[in-house]
Amino acid sequence: MLTLHNIRVWDTGERIDLSVEVASERAFTDPDCVTSGEVDGSNLTLAPGFADPHVHFRDPGQTAKETMISGCRAAAAGGYTDLLIMPNTEPAIDGLPVDAGQPGAAEVLDAGYGTVIDYLQHYEQAHGVPLPSHYDLSVCASKGRAGVEASDPADWERYIAGHDDDAKDAEQRAHPIAAISDDGSAVTDETLDAALNNAKQTGLCVVEHCEHHDSGIINEGEISRQLGVPGIPADTELAIVARDIDKARETGVHIHFQHVSTASSFEAIRKAKAEGLPITCETAPHYLALCDEDLLKYGALAKMNPPLRSAADKQATIEAVVDGTVDMIATDHAPHTIEEKRSGLESAPNGIIGLESAYAVCHTVLVDGGYIDDRRLIELMSTRPMELLRRQAVDIDGLLNKSAYGASNGSVSALGVGHDDLAGVDVESGDSSIHGVDHSGLMAGDVHDGTASSTRRVLDLAGISAAATANQTGVDLVLIDTDARWTIDPERFHSKARNTPFGGWEVTGKPMATILDGRLVFSRIAQSER
Image (cartoon, rainbow, N blue to C red; front, top):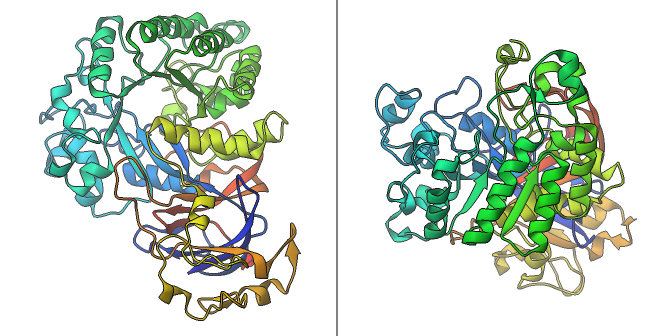
């Protein structure tokens, strides 16, 4: 049992104590960190777990770059509890039977599954490894993600939450198809109408890689001319955004724009939202922190698609976060080997990893920069993306208020804890000794932010399990040190990949522990903090 004292609830500011058991089969730690004992948590903030609606885990097909195991560990280490897997695996996530001989086919077929969807839904069972993150799947808009023929809902509709759930096993219910996307490419003109019709038929949103270009390496501008490489005009993004806004107006289908990066695109989205159209959008940490000028320093480590844009576009991206045009921040976590990234700017693949640095980069740029506060950043990284995934972020105050044994002194256990769990607690007299822990003794009667240990409520997660419904997760939480100052070191990442331009950055804000289904799955709380 890990007990943290005097932690702050992210949205109410209340100081509480938290007790959580370790999920021994899933849990892992940074070196020399703890999963049990007594910890002064007065530097920690408790928030709903982060959710990332845009990750690439390369499994199956490119597992030298990342696997579901390493990707989910990277997610948990970054404070993420919920993920949306993009469909550009090999073979692609399109619901079609996998044919022997396709790249990645052996991984699926040797595990005894006929489609990539079945394989990923049953990944833990196939590999005998419990994963420390929840994840949903996106399905290809086109067969094979080739952009020629729209995928057929007959091949994947049954995997959507709420479709014949009684016939599904627990793994299928846990990892539903949650969106339609051809991410890595925009949905083509040839398949767009059919893809939107499929979305309307199934109730899914279209998650759109809103950019298309036939040539170019980096953003078109002074830097591309200086480096002598072909440029990608900014209007290659706006063209897809404008096209899809028209389609949203015509069809009423919810379209979510991924990794938006240009001022002109944000203005178009801003106007579409004012019109009341079903449009949402995300940006990524790198478009907030970097611009094309940074390619001069980082080279191919800063090569991505869409490319880093101008300094003016970077500022417009920040402003779109501030004014609410940006609904959420996603990482677009895209692992590649360092060898690939060292192959030169023109031939290196697009993309960077982000799960283990996203919060800190965003906190440094947006919160330290004075643009938004800590609460707004948590909304952008947790509650808003959870809405896109049609899941409910944890209401911490609601958990505390649901206690059947709440007392005026606030020393209570949370949801699902019976009377026997309160043995030794005199709620009438205010005795705060729970599970053998003398809270008031530990804090020596100190008062932090006006809350004495004898008056703090206790959130005891023992006994809490995952919610039974498909549209609600269990108790998934992150503990953050918003003031922590640290240096990003990719060699300490839990991801297989190291392709990030943020190595060596001095940043603030650090996820310190991650809780999945009411159990601790990751900790970087050091021995010295006990």
